[in-house]
Image: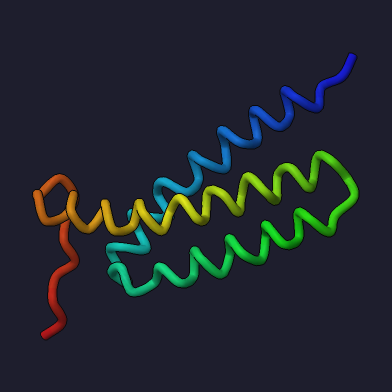
Amino acid sequence: MNFTGIIIGVATFLIIGLFHPIVIKAEYYFGVKCWWVFALAGVITVALSLLVENLLISTLLAVFGASSFWSIGEIFEQRKRVEKGWFPKRPEKK
């Protein structure tokens, strides 16, 4: 039996699930100015996925990279959700 597909599916689900709270916390503490961290993580992991020979690890790196790139848009969407009052806004420092 080959479990590679199931492992990739479960890991993809977990990676995407992990990015939701990361985006929310990143926007809360840093605002949208941290978008470049997601871009850098995406570039690094996608590049690594091209260099790794193991299919499973290469695929998971690519999924992580794609999720990082997706998070760039999501962090700007999160700002809009905060403005609508759907999520708490970080209080201003005094």
